[in-house]
Length: 203
Image 1 (cartoon, one colour):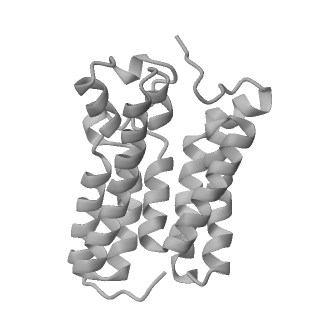
Image 2 (image 1 turned 120 degrees about the vertical axis):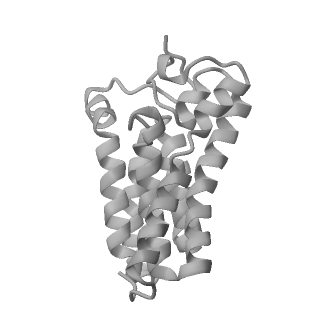
Image 3 (image 1 turned 60 degrees about the horizontal axis):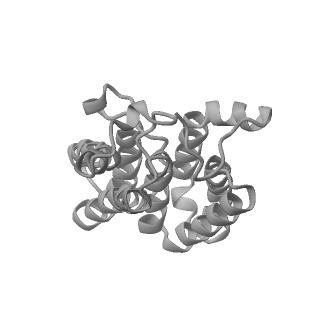
């Protein structure tokens, strides 16, 4: 963890703000605006970009990916600018939790992949960029989105250390654990050979 360079009330404030930023369900918003239906009744029922892609609308899926990543980055950058590095890491974790467990959707949110990558790009851009590359390679090699997410998450903690961002290691471990927890059903399907391929539509 970095040195605590903000007061506890300031850290608590950025935890709340980070959560609220992270809890914006862009997938749901775009699906409604573009008349794609209720994402919770489509495919996996997830609100992220992969499930948006199952509607057949690539534009909506791309926008969801970008916006979900951007909200993680925005939470980090705002907190860092106004309150320092400790606040940035608190806001990062809170934004991730907000995406995965948004109060507006009865705590039934997304799996956090895009938000996770956005956080890393803002927190330590070389690590974030490397994780994006790992995600892309693993996803396209296997044609399984969750494999890319798990590979990127697993690599992130090692990359934080090897690229000189050890002060964010605790945060990296917590984010990785959350990614794996949110993908526990996917892991079971991967082991059983039943995980859907990228772009496949589910009823």
